[in-house]
Length: 319
Image: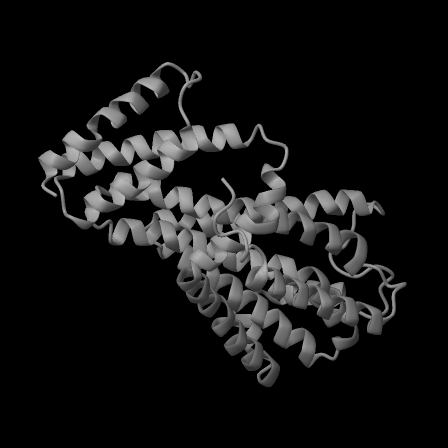
């Protein structure tokens, strides 16, 4: 089909949708159906290499309709339930190549520095100061009444708030760094991998295994995974700027941002869960090592199963 024929065939429906959006979305239009059709038409226009003028028009209309669709969906009581039960894990699987790349950028430096710091007691000082090393060692001293960061108050609730702020700050920087053509996300993934790996190696070397690993295993299933997901979302932004395809970079970035935010909403939820576990569960010295390790292992299995299996029967449902 030539472009003129394509525009003649669908032009009236585009005008109707544009007018509907300008009127504020009054009744008389099946928006989800119109949105799905418009997405298909955009895909056809891109595949057939129609002019940039037409593709940009359809891009803008898709984004405006997308915003209105999700604005309507937020009014439905089951929106977040659907997202957490199916939408979030599906978004992770859809962006699998970015997730695996982020995993490698995070895990490989962690392994190198972890093993290096375990075998060489001087290597960690290339990553942090002697004062910081002493602070980390004191945090996991088996003689402590409470594990983890030193508390200025006995309130676990206060630490819960601190961990939320700290975790989300790390994840947001890792995600937002993607705007620098992905380089910022790569830096923060590698940096956090190096830093955490060095801590793992040093604490293992000094023999605080019985406190350190039971402490980190529970909330780590959510926190470490969330950092990787934030990096994957950032890499998705960066890729849209490096290779925007037939789109202008700003348009490609906006489209990538829609996909990235499908990951980030769930990532922030995971970090809240991680903060809760770190403040109220991980820090306790009243629980046995076996219990913490067993629960922590179960949480890791739960997280893996959730992202591997959840939402696979929801292919034709959801926002």
